[in-house]
Length: 485
Image (cartoon, rainbow, N blue to C red; front, side, top):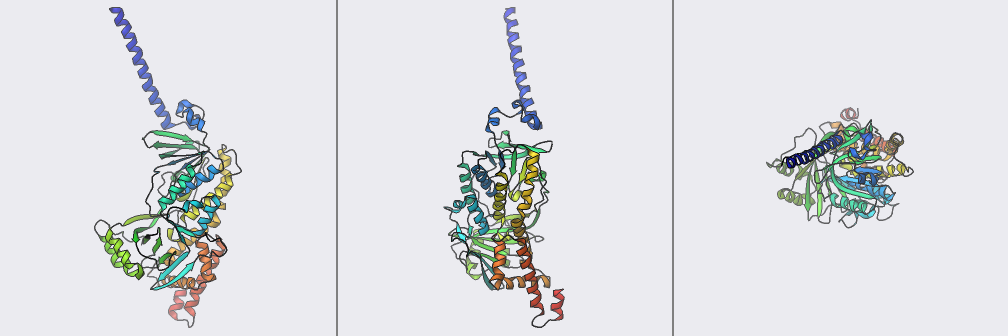
């Protein structure tokens, strides 16, 4: 009997020892995953990376599968890169941004082989803008005479467009797209080695690659370590959908130079027109829940919109499907970091008045693809970082033109109590109404068809000269000369 107790005690002790070792091992692995010595991660599978993770041999990790992330995944995958995309939510989203693609952006889609992504999503062609001020209107068409008939702008539901691009990217065998929330970048001695993320089951995992590209949108929590993350929120959009009505100028976006700031209308499907009402900085956002917003839209906004849209606008208010979206503005101020790159709205945001958001992202991807194509090995992070610094200069012609124009037009198109600014607003409207080269030049800039900063400067001066001319002809007055100053 004593012998049995003795043997039983030994067995129990052994089992207890094994259990303690396992618990200690789990705690050790968890601690290693949290502290993650990044140099050892790439060498020792016991530190938190499984053998299957190693065998995947990912070339590039992309954080985010919106317009920028999905396009980039397809583009790099088509070039033979082994791409892993981690996106927080892969389901169809209903968003109120990214619904208008300029012709310059469509040309980039063609260049990337993604033009079929605007098919079968109820997208419509857009041929320009209609501009309204004080009951007057003028049509500003894109200068498309030298392009094929299918080249134009496109308007659509953003979520449908993104799903088509995700499907296209996921169809490539070397692109892996998975749901997960990236919580942090894995950094070792100043070099990004990958990301730490939670999958849909809440498990904390890591993914490693020579290059991590962050393009997880305007709410990115990763940008702070890769750029000057100061973000301004100078305005907010109030969004509605108008149904079963026609725009005064078919297949054109409509910009109303209202007081206090512009109102936008554009079609996003055969039966739906998007309306975006700008609420400028400094003005309190009316509450939707207590009816303040509905009252503001009826009393302040409705009297300023074209009569053809009035009934549908009031009907949309009555339906109560009013949404708001704060809009951010952030200059491109990167901190070049070995092993990582920022792209899309996580990197650079501008006022959406000119609809240049997606055009900028697609243009950046074309530039980045050209830079990466000659490189077969991405493992030298420092050398790659130095090489990719040229990305920031190569992107400037397109991006600086669209960014500058977007900010300038918003300031000019917004109402002001300053007589000089009000006069400049009128001068800009009249200048564009002249047609010909006076409208074609600015619209070519706005649409991404002519991304030349010099052309932008020329038209800025031309508008200024035109405005001064209006003040001094036919006869100057003291008041007009004062506004000129």
